[in-house]
Image (cartoon, rainbow, N blue to C red; front, side, top):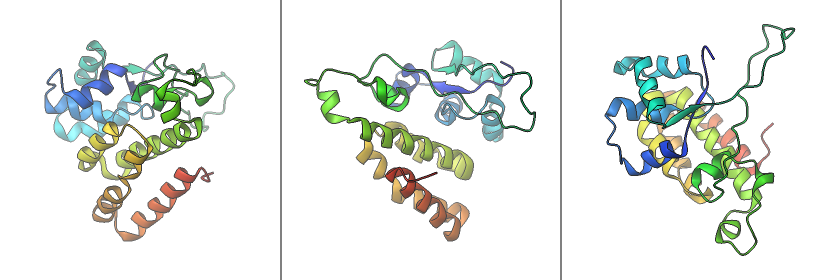
Length: 200
């Protein structure tokens, strides 16, 4: 793939929470920006001001902290104007991790009824969590960039739906400061629609 889409691996998710590898701040910043939706060149453009280049992505790949998202083959007859969409992330087999909650299709959450994971995360909650997680990371990437670094850290550490919803006001405040009240209110309205599942 010439310009692949990257997502964090489970090891990458763990590194955000634990800092076990003691990555330098440049690598950590790039790892935080990887969300399974933006292409490599777009990510590198966002962090270019910090002097981060393609070698940083190669380091994250070599350490197993990020991986390329498999994309379906594009038909040759496809119209060139049609925007390429990211393939849905592949299912993870560990259904009890935050990583799995973000990426596994809800239909595949089939843990036995006696497990605490099933009780804690009903399919509707997992769907809402996935919608909000991707909404937060997309908004932070598009509207805040590196100014949203600390907020992105909090999104990555949010282990459940209430923890994500608790970040609504910090996101609102950051957007007001960066983009103005009108834009911030419009994005908050979108966030509420995404949370309720009413977004188009």
